[in-house]
Each structure stands twice: as C-alpha cells, then as structure tokens.
Image (tube, rainbow, N blue to C red):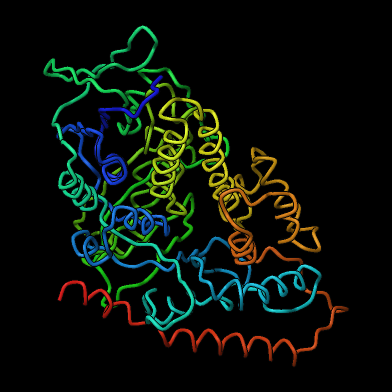
Length: 502
C-alpha cells in the first residue's frame, strides 16, 4: 500500500487500453516516471471499431483535436446506431439510437415520452423514436455532428476508427509526452512479502520493477487475475454470445454517419464505416452455430460469399473481474472484463476506469483508502451496461430461431432489469418512476425508451381509445419543422472530413 505518489508506474500491454492509460497518466501526473512494456509477438486486431462520446472526452483530456487524430486512423463521425431486424413487428423493423443533444431535453424528449405513455395506454399515436431526435435527422441527411459556431445547443458524438491505427497514434502521442516504451514479453509476476507486485519478469530474463502496475494484458490478465488471484465473474448466463467473425468490405460512395447493427439468425452483424472500408463482424453464440456457419452467413449478408476476402475468427470472454483495483495494480481493458460490442462501450469503460482511479487514488493520498468504493463504482458501470445490452436480447421481437426465442425466454436477468421491464409495461410515468427508483444504471431513460419503443413493445391500439388527430398532427409537424431547421446548422459529413486532410 502506497502512502505517497508513485515514482514509477509500469503498464503491461499496449493496444488502445494501454496507450490510453499512458496518455492520461502522462497528461495529469507529469512528475511520475511512466513506462509501458508490450510484446511485438502479440498483435492488435485492426478491425473497424466504434465509440461512444467518451472518446471525445478522452481526447479533450489529453488536448488532442479531431483534426489531429482522425485522419491518421481513417476515422469518421458517428451520430448513433441503427438497429435493424431486431423486431419483426410491422413498422418497427428498424430504429435509430442517437447520442444526446441538448435539443432533446428541451424540445423533443417531452413529446416522445408523452406519446409513449399514450401508446402504452392503447392510443394509436406514433411513438417510434425515429421521429423525435435531431441526430436521427442528421444521420438520414448524411450530416456530420459539428454545428456552426452560432448554434446554441450542444451535440454529443462518437467515432468510427481503425483500432490498430488508433493504438499506433496513441503510442506515438504518449512517447512524445515522455512515456517510455519497452519491447518485451512478460512471463512472470513477482510479489513482495505484503502480496503486492514488486516487478514483472520478461522472457529474456530482465526484471522491471515499479511502485504501481496497470494490467492491460488482455484476456490473459497476467497481473490482476494470474498474479494477484482476483476472481472473474462470467456473464455467460446473461449474454449468450462468445465469438465473432470479422472481415472488411468496400466502402460506399457516401460515408454513413452511423454504425449499423443487423440481427441475423444466431446473433448480429456490425457495419462500421471507415474512410477506406467498412469494418464488418458477426457476433454469435457457439452454442447455436459453429464458426464455419457463422462465416458463411456473414459473407451472404455482405454479398461476399464467393469473394477472396480473408475472415478472422475471435473468441470472447464475457464478464468482469470482482476487483478492478487490488493492492498496487489496476486492470484496464480486456484484463478487467469485456461486454460484447453491441453498444460500443469498451473505450468508455477504459476511460472511466482510468479517470476514476486517478481521482480516487489522488483523493486518498495515493493509498488504497478508496479501493473498495472505486471497485463498487466500476462494477456498477459494467453491470449497468450488461443490463442494457441484455435487454436488447430479452426484449427482441423475433421468432425465427431457437437463439432468439431462448434469449427472449432467458430468466437470468438482474433485479434492476426486471424492474425496468415491469415499469415499461405497468407504470403511468415510466421516466419519473425510473428516477424515483434509481433504475437508470449506465443509461438514461431516453435510451431505454428508444430501445423498447423502437422494438414496438407496446400493447395493440384499442378501438375505444380515440385521440384528436389534429392535435397530434400539429405537435408532430411543429417538432419535425424544429428538427429540420436545427439541421440547417450542420455540414455534410463527407465535406467535414475532407477539411481535415486539406
């Protein structure tokens, strides 16, 4: 247990998680000697990835602009995610989940929630989420998320990027900030008499000592799980998927401003637009389909059944550790846990873990005073994201395979998720009751409502529930006119990106 700021921190493992940690530490603790050891024998899978707005928060924290990093990583903007074919209910086969805009809170969300509540009571009003949000309009019009300077409302956005190129950019950025990169393969962890890590040993016999260690060694979790014996809690009963097959495809003439998630027979396929290609993958459960079948289905989905394009197969270990910070070690990235990529939450978890650890560690005068509180907070983040992703499967409206039927019938869901689904069906004030019972978890009521309304999880309209069509039409016309006028303040996505390379 430390009682003063560590003089030397060693990060084990590179990739996005390791180099994010290195950059944040170097930006905030400039008087600490920070080193990162990574093995050239452990490659990075350069698939197309997406992020939430947390990646913007990270780059702001290390003072790097979009123009500085995006061209190097073939990055594009992301307004949100389209979920396609998760429901077979007529009119609800697809919906868009946008990121947050300040216009939502003031102008669009109140009407959306009002119409949801009316629809739950049997009134035949339009409660599909695609009609209510600015970023949905921007995406359909191929507009980027950066408004004119005169636009008075904030708009959150994420990115699509090549993960291998992002790792390289972050490595160069960290080394410019004084981080030392060491090439080596860690084979052993050395503990002192107090059970803390004293050093790691490399395959060439070299020993690297430090005061504090950050484990970014991936699913192997060499330090936290293997070295310190921290246990892993599997999410397998909650989330069935444990594998993926990935491959690229040619990019479209106009770059989309969205990730697309399409439900297939035994899982779902992502489509992520980079500047030079689409990144594609099929996330599935090996309990329902084997790797060859999954690859064939992905190729059919992409129209590349006979194409000479290499596919790569990945395994996923879904769950989290019981403690993310233990003794003098913090786990970041796959070493701390993994939740399938449906909502692109990995980088948000990396950023929250590192930033929150630094806050707690410094607040506790660089001791383990707040270790338990920190672990409780990060576990709640993981479990909250898990619940939201589980809800995608639990609430799915498909009946075409055992996979989808079994997901809908899965009883291994948390009390929180059970309570949210109960409120959706029975509450007279879904949003108010979510706040009242503190059920948001890692997602706000807007996100829960977008998903459940987007799937069409409503009772059928009742003939005895009449509604004044004139008033509803007037409300929707005013809303759509407001959204359209707001959209005039945004540039074409393609033109926006072109400015970064001029």
